[in-house]
Image: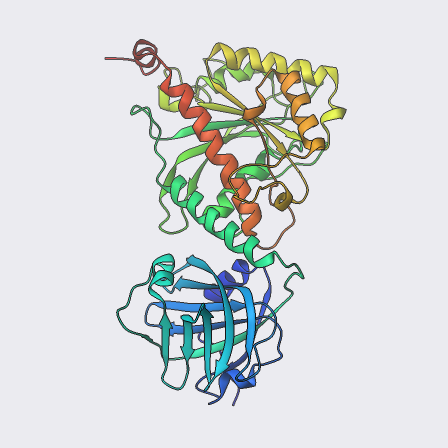
Length: 443
């Protein structure tokens, strides 16, 4: 009889993403083989899971299982807890410990202290109290389980720092997700920060929107239509809310996508549309006309927008690989747009997209960006060109042709989003009461 897993499709996909979009091949189960761990030796890197009511608890081991009654030197394994009702919720903890298999049990020991032990014969899992705290699971006695399964991990990177990279990325990704899910603007009069993306055709505006939405949905989203380097696909003014995949609730920020800027007059977004967009006069799905800006007598024109309808942050989006190719006419158009943005007192940031290998951009703590000399020179160049401080210029790698999410890329996308919201919040908080009342219509 064929051996099958109890993992659902979503649970298996979550584990594969956790390990960097690898493949998992079921080797055996405790119900199918009495000496489970003996059978799974010399199979390379493995994931072992047990099913405990509403949770799946498991451990990843790089390299082979040890042979029976032999210790393996301390290895950078990690254990995890996956919530069965929410496959996106995974908690991890690094497990630096010796590994051994004795009497059919898989045991991790640190300084003679048993940290993690799976005993298939008794269907019991022991977890040290300090490790329980890190994983967010608590039990005064051993955990009982109804099945134990071992998977071979295929397609894993041959990198000694792989485990620590993935676990740290996942930890900070989850922290950023939690922070952004509970984010609220400092100004009570608005419930959402509205971010307008402006940039040349093909710079990655729509891709960034799709990338943010993908991270919160837990799967790749292609809602905002992506244009090419030559023609702007975005002809409508679109306002996109971002929903949390856990419960579908709209989060406290939204994006506005517009037609791409072009150096030629009469092509791309009409600069005369910018003041109306910034003030919140342009409705969702308004059809742009490069030759003719929206007018107050347009049937859908919003004549009396409130503060919540306005743009609160403008993000200029540039392809990091094409900065040197920007023409003087395009720079002049950016300057023209900036005059309107500054006149409205709106926060400004720059997104440098299409960077390569985001894992090298993140420092060890996954909270700051380690800008290489090349990137630093590009950032300084953009700072001088647009007169925007370097600390408001961010590098990001959008999802483009990928089929699965990546925790490293997710972390950088979320970090950049958080910084944008903070910049917008600072500007909003600086508004005087009189100015705030004026922009909201006052009483």
